[in-house]
Figure 1: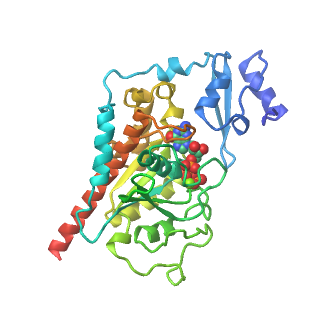
Figure 2: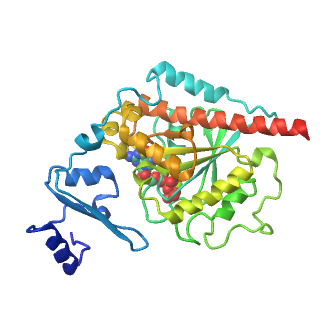
Length: 358
Ligand SMILES: Nc1nc2c(ncn2[C@@H]2O[C@H](COP(=O)(O)OP(=O)(O)OP(=O)(O)O)[C@@H](O)[C@H]2O)c(=O)[nH]1
Ligand SMILES: [Mg+2]
């Protein structure tokens, strides 16, 4: 394992810190870009220096003379009274599943609610669809390709119907999966493409071209703009661990998207994923999610950075490595899904009101 620090940089660091010797404990490109991997390698190792590099070449870091012990530092911060109450019971899971199955858009011309998932590369968009699909299948499935890579694994626009069981009826909800966003211009999902998706111009399986957004005269461009093809709720999928290190570029892109979504009057929600990786006490027991001070702080931070109220932020853990379903995990995912459907209701209420005025 070779350090990225040059000998000169290492010498400088050592002269700042006194008579010490550095040894490399953790390298994200080798051990994984997760808080859990970091703590596995760095906890109980004595004083540490952390150095981070972002894609624009910016170097940042920190020094701590204390032993890392996340359980003590952050995970130990358990709030006695949870900031949202969740009933962790099998009956609750059934109730939530039934509400999803029974959902009907309040506009008769629309059969299924269309929810758009957007967010940075690797945030867990495809995994969220897979997770919801798994719940209704009864076991963990992975229809949408998910995984880790530098750029977006999802390269096509996909509109997924969730089905109730193996050969069950499609549920009244369509989750639209998109390519991941990147901070650089001309890379990742394009803001203009998002606009076209919102208005229903982009067909299922459309292959995104980051350098050229879909043009109105292109063959694939869907001219019809019926309400049922439009997006009825936008969900920003954000990795909890990366909220604090989100670049200004990405924040600006998200702000530009928010402006367009606002103009169209589409309700918006933030899905905070990977709560298990973000906080050890949540990894330990998912039911701690609303008792974790750390998760609450991240929710407040994302609320500030994206400019959405706390009431629009829902934390989840997607299925990533498990094979069997877990009740708490399902309840959290289903609560998020129900929140999306409530927002869809708001959107249709608005459309109904508008029609009355026209
Ligand atoms: N531990 C944990 N891992 C997750 C969670 N959500 C997603 N992952 C993992 O994160 C990685 C990226 O997930 P994807 O669902 O592919 O992310 P995406 O947003 O679709 O990414 P792109 O399509 O590449 O933009 C995968 O390895 C998932 O297994 C989560 O809640 N917890
Ligand atoms: Mg994806």
